[in-house]
Length: 415
Image (cartoon, rainbow, N blue to C red; front, side, top):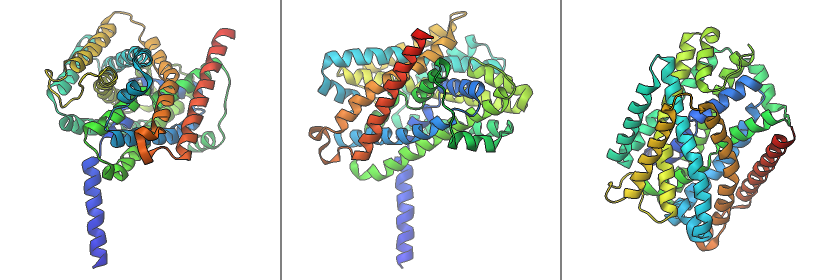
């Protein structure tokens, strides 16, 4: 009898978890966007397995930070941008969000660059693939509801696992991978530090924090759902790091070993063909396309969300255009600007991609400081303020990122 009750409770918990699944997994998966894939590909091609160690602390920090977002969203019922405005004032909020908006336009441009590059591998011109993709993502959000959009995003998340196939076809050296994870080699030169900041900036992007908290609110989660949300966050973080791991491995075991230098993810897909076969190349390109179109949808949503929240405008995918005109105008504008940049002949897409990821890494400490101060405010969070471990990991992350930023600045000036 007790076994039957226990079994029923187990199935009940699984059903509830599947119903609440979404914000954590989507936020984690969308982090492996075109900019992320480019950064991981360049990291693997340049440094082989050397940078795999960065994914371990990145995973721990990702779980802690996303948990903070989920908890703040559930407890307050407000988005992160809304809380920053209420507690930091309009002037401070304005400067923070102008920086984030510029970075996110660059990030969205990167997503469409990923669409153009991936489709180019299959022989499709960017003048066809980019406008059609832009129309698709615009219609998906403007005409869809949160529930319908979320289901499509979860399917996109599953497709990102194709990078596991691409990496295995590259025949990696698992012994060397193990050594790189256990005994990391750290260099203090401009290239290495830039890539480390890029990897951290793309694994834990500033805009993710705003999207995660807004998604929790839009899904209508309550505190009784908190334990299921934590598992959603953990699974999403695992998916993020696993995909990043296999992208680095795929490029390290093929491109790095053959001394092939790349500038973007498309180069990695093309270079894989003679080394690991046409299937590995096409799988890599397909993964890039899915990741890019996925993120080209989410990133403008996240940006429109937090800008509207920051300045008190209505926002949300479930709202109609008349109910949230500022949200939809901003969403449309970001996509339009990004597409126009991509369609300019000889636009410096590689520089936009790499610097948008570095900008993420530089802006992240600012967002994290705001988050940690808010989540420790008893007037806002009550008894649900941070525990000591959360604060230790959060503040350590801020200090490390600031230190890396200063090292990058120093090396840029004096080398």
